[in-house]
Structures are given as C-alpha cells and as structure tokens.
Length: 378
Image (cartoon, rainbow, N blue to C red):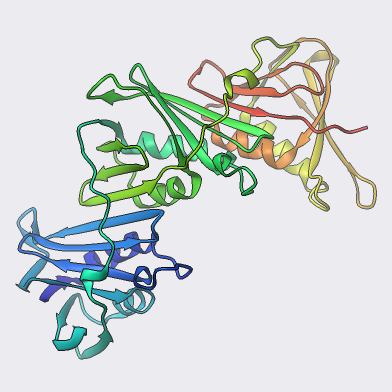
C-alpha cells in the first residue's frame, strides 16, 4: 500500500474515527485504526464493538486531488500513536507506505516515522446492513434532537436500558425520549420515511453523543437505517454504526400528567439565571435543591438554604400564574439542564402539586417537553 494525501483531510478523518476507538478493549486489534486504500480513495475505520465509524476520503473532490493512490492495500496502525503523529507532521501532504512485514512508513517533509502495523485481515468486519428500510432527517435537526434529550439518560448501570435514548417512529414522526427515572426529556419531529414501518429502539446515549460531535450543522439529509441490533447513520463520506440496547424501554407516556393545578409562564433566560444563582449555595453536599413558591401578584420566589453555608432568596416576575398557590423543591441541576435544552424565550411550567412530576414546555411549541420529579423536603 502506498499513497500521498492532504494532511488536513487525513487529520479530520482520524479525529472522527478516533471517537470509536478505546484503549479498554478485550480485542487488541481494536486499539488500532484500519486504513484501506482502493482505486477510489482511502477509508479509515475505528471501532470499539459498540460503535464503529468509517470515514472515506475520495481521490478527488470538486476537481481537486486529495489522495494520490500509488498502490492499493490495507493496514491497521496503533490509533494513539498514529493520531498524534498525523496532527504534528510538518507539511501539508503525507505519504504513507507499507513495506514488507507490515512495517509502515509515514513521511512528511523531512520527517519520517516507522510504525509497526497489524494485519488488516484480522480487523473485524463492519456489520453488513440491508438498506431497504431507511429514513432521512436533516443533520442540524438530528443534532438538536440529540442535544435536547441525551443529557437525561441514566448514568447508572443498574437499569442498562435507561442509559439509552428511546427512538420511536410512527406515522412519519420520530419521537426521542430519555429518562433516568428522576427526569425525562422528550422531543418529536416529522421525518421522511421510505416505507410505513414502525420502529421502537433504544440507542446508547454515549453513541448519540459521539455522533453529534462528528456530524456538521448543515441541513443536508442524513440517512438512518435500523436493523434488529444495529443502527447506521450515513452522511456524506461517513458511516456511523451503533449497537442497540436489548430490552424493552418503559412506557413513559403514563408519567406525563394530563392535568395541572398551577400553571406558570415565565421568561426562560430570567428563570434560568435565577435558578443558577440560587444553586450557588446549594451545590455543597449532594442535595443541590432549590425551592420555588408562588406569591400574590404573579411573583415567583426562588430560594435555597444550606444551614452550614447560608441562604439565598430571589423574586422574579412571571408573565402569568394560574391556579393554586404552590411550594415545591427540585434539583437545580435538573432544572438548568431542562431549561438549556428548550428552545424559545418563554416557557410554561405545569405543576400538579408539590410531590407530583411537573412539565416544562416552550410556549406555543408542542414538539418538546421536559419533566422533572420534585424533591421531598420537610
């Protein structure tokens, strides 16, 4: 194998596939990156057997030559060393050549590295996915949907299914739900599907997080293919595979209350900043709890009291308060996460009592909601 390639394109592809490479693997060859040169271009692959990422660099693009292939072939190189080397090479082009016995030479300017390679034949094959059931979604919308839900997944392995985000597809609508059983994030969007199949799968939160780092904020469509145990995201020159979590996701529709006793409409930014200030004294210890109470005249009082540190009280004006008076306590972190995920300047919070879950939605937008369970304080 021998080719010459533009360094910045190589660096970008290496960074993308590195997101799937881990040092903690039971299969030693997966600590490497597979590099394969064909007559069309160069493909890099990284995998940790949960996530696999394949990045393709074409020979030319828009009339510019990116790779000059002198000899086709494949090799696996230690990801840690290869990625560091490529980033620090002195010139804009890199020559990579595999000599006998898997010795690999990386040349750039006056710099030359020799790395011991591994046999590419031993590298696990990526899943072969039948692409007859695919649907499309705009990349920027996909990123937004991940950002607005994935933070609510559970980090505890006691219920592995909750470490993923539940994706449901019905009637050309995608619903993403994440919950750690103390809070829940939900986002819906219309999508284009090629057939009317319904899906109900759970994608690891970690996979979605890595995917959102790699894909760009364009409105180009990304193809998504779901099989029994894999999901494939297919963007231009990029394939991202993730395994799906086994098991049934709990039915969360029962958690979302239909009625409410107190409705508060408030400016998102003001509310977020007030919660942030109140949480300054609540961060010590694990509790991180702030209290909210409604006062006459549409005012909300937000307070926090940590006996050994001190207390904070702040009033903000709401746009409207309907219903019963309310005193409720909740995690400041959960509330701030939820508010940051919502889009829109004003939100409506529906409370159904001091010990019942409450729902936060942007005003005039039914496609997204956040739900939080209050904290019992005596």
